[in-house]
Length: 244
Image (cartoon, rainbow, N blue to C red; front, side, top):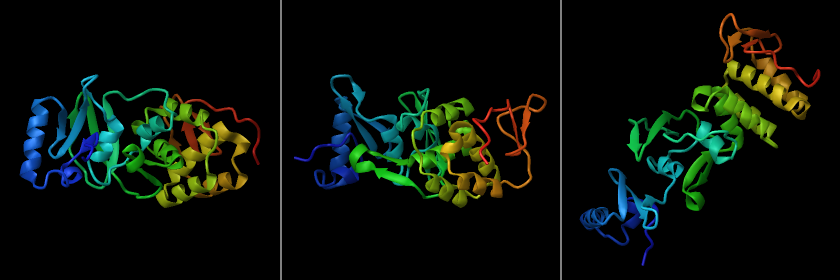
């Protein structure tokens, strides 16, 4: 007898229910008995009879909404244990198929169109999720602070990271090819990691930043200028010592 997955569609059970009509009959009866819940048309979740809650997590649900859906930004920081806070009522995910927001059991699932299919770990068989690598999670979070819980949340993550692959970071930056991102990454890495980052990493970032001065989570009139990275910041971060 085939075990029913925590999250499933007709394709997952077509060996057991040969036709869509048989499957629909099963779904109707199971919902009526409060054994499963419908998340959206064609996607269902098993209910834990002990707690009367579904087994699946919000991360697993997000990754099952589309065949190519995956996690990044704050959701990835949460996955890697680097988030200081948890987003209780919202879950962002990336996919090539933009869709309307989906609300299920108090959580709003929001899609963001994916531009890059790089550094994605497929953990569907083991954990029921797809998630970007730690390196991409950090770069994405710096790239879009608003989807990452704010600058303090990103800096909390950076303060709790033991090791990163600097070559992977540079590879991602080259693909994204955003001058302001080189500025932000170089500034934050220099602040948090200092000389633990290879000199060549900072050199490459500096070679890509250009001459544009940008405001980084700061307000005009209440900012300080970081001349090295051409950033207006809330306050001048004290570097551990001169790097080079």
